[in-house]
Image 1 (tube, rainbow, N blue to C red):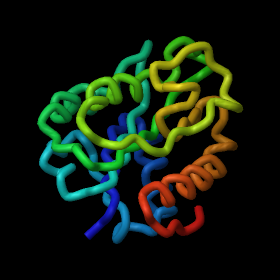
Image 2: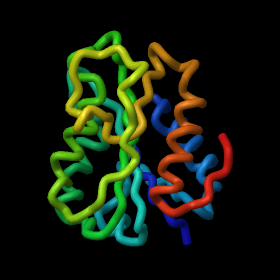
Image 3: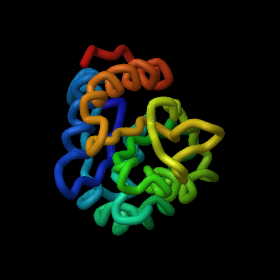
Length: 175
């Protein structure tokens, strides 16, 4: 059974591509299972002790469409005792005031659920003004800007997977 559930929404394929890289870096399907939120339920989260919630920010600080439809499922999810982290995609140049706001919207929904948040990521190297996805000076999880910093994605994924592997008590493969 997979130890990590990666719940994601992807409209143009960028988020799906990134979570596939993360899955591979974690050790493949035997370690991490990909679940698209367009067909997932709160019950699907119960089989995992470790969760990665991946969502791009759309428009001006909004959830991706599949996440917008799925967000209410989180109210029924039993997250107490689970470790949760995030992956966010956004365009810091085009939307500097709402970069990765989707992460903050999901976080607000589950912050009192009894889960432990892991995988915080530094804001250094990103050029943005504001983000609901930043708590205590760090992103809630991995921050990806494929529009402006695609050349940094693989390195960021590799470093972040190393971080969460320790926090999830996993042995990570390399990217």
